[in-house]
Length: 439
Image 1 (cartoon, helix red, strand yellow):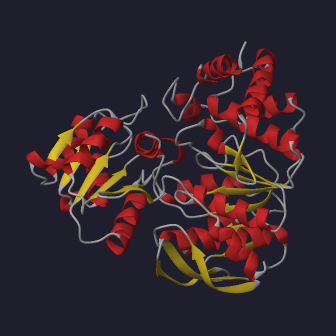
Image 2 (cartoon, rainbow, N blue to C red; image 1 turned 90 degrees about the horizontal axis):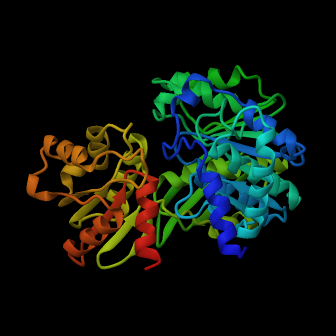
């Protein structure tokens, strides 16, 4: 069997499993019966590879993917061998599993998935898609003998498949309302779920500034706690050509004029969290040159990413109300004063009125409603109805289901000096990226 056919076969096997991200399989399995038994059993069959190295374990409603990438870049820049696990992916599952910035090779991923397929019949309960990919990542990191892994939580914390790692440092970027079907409808309940990643002896890097939630994390009795704005944070940040210029502080250092090649003021908070996490893991402040070099190398595809000019096309994975507000603020600061076409596709559990309002849809010149390429995708006609109910003229709202066609239409109808903003779901962003970046 040639490599392409083998890859196709092993990925077909992977995709035959329950996938809560895409909606493939019984979604109530996680809600009614949360458990770590499947991932623990799977990893025990592999020899518990996750215990072969320490981890920086990151959770949060928004920013955790960017913070994970930044943390891994900082640790790699000081010379460590660093694995990073993030989710979801935009185009290829390999994007989730990296070593010092490089994606896991197809042949390595296929070999580990083959091993997992051989193990699966011995398990009491069939694992989910995410559990299998998580196990593959943790096994690969052990195979290549990483010094540390930066591991992003999929959803929540307590019952997430990643909550088996040796998280010497636990990181919480922030707490907002999202994934209420799994985590609960209040910030307090969501915070309690996220606090579940704090292991005995771990140090907590708390990026959530609300003092009313702090006790929820402190009750987990971490060995130490450092808190955003008190112990670390952003003294100043401003717009710079191609990104932001930051002034950050941590318990051990003060870092001025740090260039971060990412758009959005909120990325400064992610950078502060990542810097605090890296220094906490290392137990020492980082040299200014290391910080400068690491942040200059950070990339975050699909997060306020400019992929086209004339018209300007910006992709952003804003998929909840807090993320949409952050995107709107970033656009107002960095890309103001132009007619804007919004290409939006949402998942079914999102409120279309809330999301459109948070995105500033009533100020857009045109809305193009599409369907995310997943069974969880919201019917775009419902999104269009919500747009009209918010007061947007019917003639300014288009419904074009396929993302690629929606994006191509948006580019075509937008003047060269205008803007196209694609948002609402990482599934939409991934499909748009395939259309615009690779075509």
